[in-house]
Image 1 (cartoon, rainbow, N blue to C red):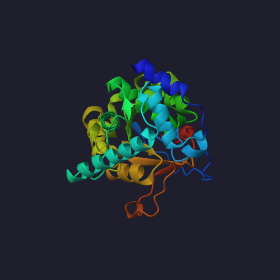
Image 2 (image 1 turned 60 degrees about the vertical axis):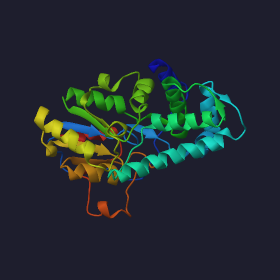
Image 3 (image 1 turned 60 degrees about the horizontal axis):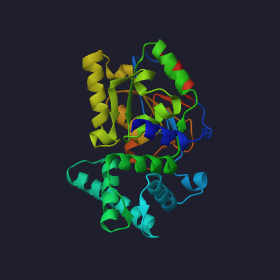
Length: 297
């Protein structure tokens, strides 16, 4: 199953390149850093979501239909894709509403459950013919993701991680993510996150926690683990991300030092209109991953 998903990602991905932000790096005095925690989308990998129309030439209905066909699902009507997309986004919305009723302010869906609901609805209404299995769900979800949010490793990713490992920096991840997120690294770099040197204890994904950034849940969990297990205090941890709210604001709240990654105009988020970030400034501003070693004293 895993090999099948890796091949879907490889066969449906192509090279992307960062779009310059026109911003200069801002690196004051380097700091004593013992651990670096990364965001993924827009930081470690290029994410082209939002440009799907110009990148693929396909509508989301086309992609939805192709995703079903990729999984060998029989299409029974001409409007299956349009109805399916309506169900898909409605199921996401209903999941968010239920989570907020349960006092989760930044809810996250589990995308496999959303796809399961959607496919079962289509089967019930005889819009498709198939047996809904876990393999089928993950196949459809992975193909759909590849075409609605094309991704590619950020330049210098592997080179940077090698340098940080040589410096014995403890590495972790806090990211809004789904089941296919870690597979992206393996598919496109032939390395798992573990192979790269990321500590499994220090990897937090929103779909597992059922809560997304800018919630502090994942940040507090990592901070606690760093302090109790590695004896690394928050001010010796650097968090790197491309979003002033989801990344810099949240990391600042738990006492991490922060670096705003302004390496790709598609994903850089200043959030100027959000009052939560009005008094928040990153410790560093970088435009290339290879500038990160400059931050470490």
